[in-house]
Structure formats: C-alpha cells, structure tokens
Image 1 (cartoon, rainbow, N blue to C red):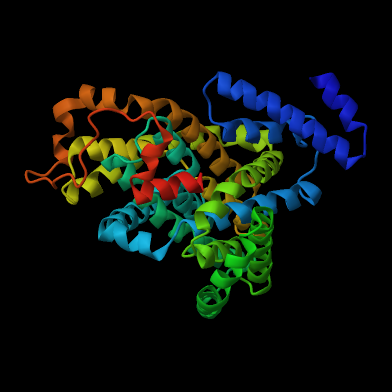
Image 2: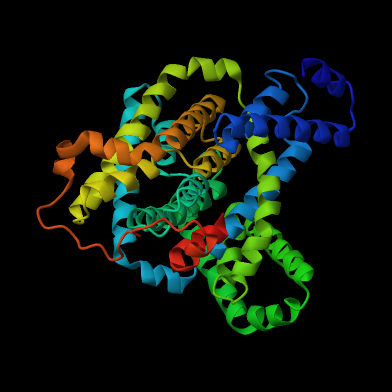
Length: 433
C-alpha cells in the first residue's frame, strides 16, 4: 500500500489521485465492515492517511474541498426534505421539549467541562455545542439494522434528532456569516431577517411554482434527479451569497420541497449520490487532521468522549424520565444518541474557516466524534442487556406514574423493509438515510 501511494504521489494528475483515493477508501470500507465499524471512521482515517500528515497524496482544499462542499450541500438538502411541517406537527411537543432540554443541558455541561480542561471560552463553546448533537446517519442506521425504527424509543430518538438538526442549522447559519472577529447583535439580526425573507420567498415558490413544475419534470425520473441536485446547489450558492452559508441555503432548498408529493422519490434517488460525495467531505476532514495535534489532545478527547458516552445518555434519560417515560425506553433512547454528530464536524469546519477555532480544536472534536461513533456502534446493540444488568439502579429515572406507551412494542420482529412504511416518522428517517 505504501508503494502504491508513493507511485500515485509522483503524479500531478488529479484524476489519478482521485482514483487512488477511491481505491484506498474501498479497501478501508471493506475492512471497516469486516470489523463491524462505522464507515465514517474508515473514511476519516483514509483522509489522515492520504493527507499531509502521512502520505501527502492530497492537500486540504482545491478539488477535494469542492467535492466535499457538494456532499455537505446534498446532505443538508436531504435533511431538509424530511422536515415536512405535517410530520413535525404529528410529533407533538414531546420531541421539542426533550430535544431542546437535551441540547441545552448537554451543551452547557460540555462547555463547562471543556473550560475545566483548559480550553478558552470560544473553543469551549464549539466543543460544548458539538458534543450536544448526535449523528442522524449513525442513529438511524443502528435503529434500522435492528428493526427498531417503529419502536417507542426509536421514534423518540428520531424526534430528538430532528430538533437537533434544526438547532445545528441555526448554529451553522450564525457561524457561517460571522467573520474572524465574531458577529455582533446587528449581524445576527441581519442573518435572521435574511433567513426569514428567503424562507418566505421559498414558501411562495413551493406553493405556486415548484409543485406544478415538479408534476411536469417527474415524467422523466432522470430529469427529476437533475432538478433536485441543481435546486440544492443553486440554493446553497444563494445562501452563500446572502451570507447564510452553503449549508443553510441547501437545507432550505430541501425544506421547500418537503411538502411536495415527490420528496420521497427525490430523497431515495439522492442517497447514493449524497453518500458518494460525503466520502470526500470526511476525507477532506481527515486530511486536515494533524497527527501531532491529535496526539496532543488525546487526554482531553478521552475525557470528553467519556462525557458523551456516559453523561449525555444520562441527560437524555433524566429528561425523558421527567416526561414520565419508562426507564428502559429512556435508557435505549439515550444509548442510541450517545455519539457526536457529523453535523458537529461540519460546524467545526465552518468555525475553522471563519477563524473562531484553530486546528487543535477541530482535531479534538474530530477525535471525540471518532471515538464515540465507534463505541456507540458496538454498545447500542447491547442496550437490552445493559438495562437488565442495571435493573433497579435505573429506578431514579422513572416516575411512579409513567406515560402509557402510545404504540405497543411488536410481539414479533418484522424482517421486511415494508415494516418501516407503517410509521410516518420511520418512513421519513428511512428516506433520509
């Protein structure tokens, strides 16, 4: 492998370098599957290997950064597609209360811990906010693999994830528009007004133009996919020009199509393209990691990872317990959310770009994400055994009067993909992934 990378390094042909990256990524992905590890970790590791810290095959930025930006735009576009207002209304206030409380408490606790570990206030704020979010991709993958998307804890986890997605999009919007000196109140007000104006314009377009237009375009499925990609990238560019950032523009582009009858068709057809382009985002992120910085932050990363793996599920359990959910449901929901989101890495990348944080903070958050995603992927399947082992110790998280389950747990596991179609929220998540 070292000889192969050395030969490729001698070539200045971008096509040859991309081919090498794809070959290495395929090998790393196959190894990750064999080890039952998340592919995200494998792709970030590939970025470290082909980046300046090891092989020097690629440099951060350039064509790699362009491909990664396209992947991020499509990721947020697909997230926007699943946020149909009718679905949000059906979720009720539980997801908003639980998700909002979880994000606020976890962010405050994470920031306090980061400050105690010696970080300055701005990097500590980024770390605190970053550890508050959980990975939509990883969580839905874990739930779908175990056929638990329609279980109560699965639907609770998905509802909390939607709230997290909304919060992180706002955080990315504010961060993207800020310069290295930070945005003041006027700038934030301008961002909000610009965002409201863009949302209003898109709402009008969605009502009077987009749906009739899609009726015609959908006659040719290939043209529908092309339109969706063009719409996502165009809205990303619009967001960038308006100071909202590529991420927010693409997200709003997805929301504008979320109420159309074609959102499921668009989402399902974009999954493969999105995942392919996201490969370059994680590789670009890995290529920016300095191994020296990563080694220097190992101790701090271990403490923060323990916070995410232990304290964050405890916060979720306490919040759901206060809402009168049973202790086992609370535990399974908390363990499902016990990792750091890919959106946290996007937020860190934006913060690095605008000068709020340095490479060491980005490396720290990346290390925490890698560790927590890996551990979560192995621990969550053992949630039932953990609940049985802890037994009565979990009674503190359960009220005497508990909330009746709004949907009984299936007596027999459905082994068919058609199970996901029975619950609107489960179908929404399946399309997003």
